[in-house]
Length: 371
Image (cartoon, rainbow, N blue to C red):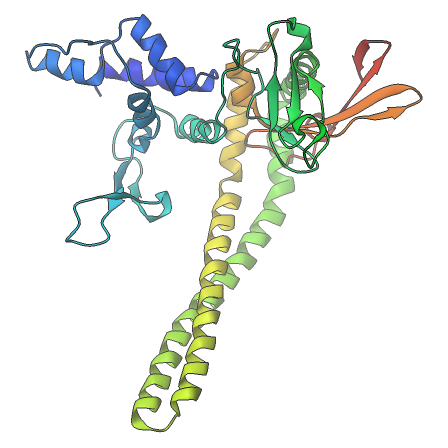
């Protein structure tokens, strides 16, 4: 493990979990005068340093964040070429790469690497005031499924910052505003995280045992059934290859007309396409089911890491929260009521009150409270 480069890599991943984007991270590293990879290489080789040895580029940060090797694995077939005649290499999909885990010491935990990839899918843009929403990328509209955008301006105080559905478009879009203030969300999310931590700490072993017992029977039965379907689908896929070959032979020998051969082969190939899709989806689902226990361990580690959460930080929010579903407001007896559902990382399906209870917000005469 590279003693000089390792802390920089860890810092880049930690800054991402803390809500910083690649461009912001590049600025921070440059401000702290951290040598770029090119400058560090030149220094080790005794060569002259580049003109700007601390000038980090956004793409350099992105390439570090995308390297799965930092989790301790080997990754091959990252790119491919359409033809041996072409020099251009095309990035491969991750499922088409060959990844062999546990071949070296990990710099970044697998859970943190996966969380960073999820956060990077939800890109967060700075506003003109160089501000970024605390929950940007995490809020989802309950009606249309779009993200909620962070809204602020120079005349706003911090208490006026808010989130609005991306498809609202000042009333000209296809969805309603689903307006909610950031200040309110901070209070609600902090309360939920504190409640979950307290619930688990009261009896951590009992919670684990109850969760595993509740899940194990249903989970194992579901996995067994899915694996049976997988075996059946794969066998049928192989049988279809044989049938297509036989049809071709019959058509060549004259035992089967060309029209009939084309019809049968088209039907068989269509069934093969359907089976391949079914196999891919089922295999992914089985893998997710088998990883549920790992998710429990990761969440338990979070509750031990953050024994006390007096206030929220971007890091805590990104480690705990997977998404927050915001429902449209309604008025009941003159009070504005709005429900939000908080989905936690790793344990989004846990059926206990501290996780499943949606939070309803009320506001009367300009004052807010949680119910």
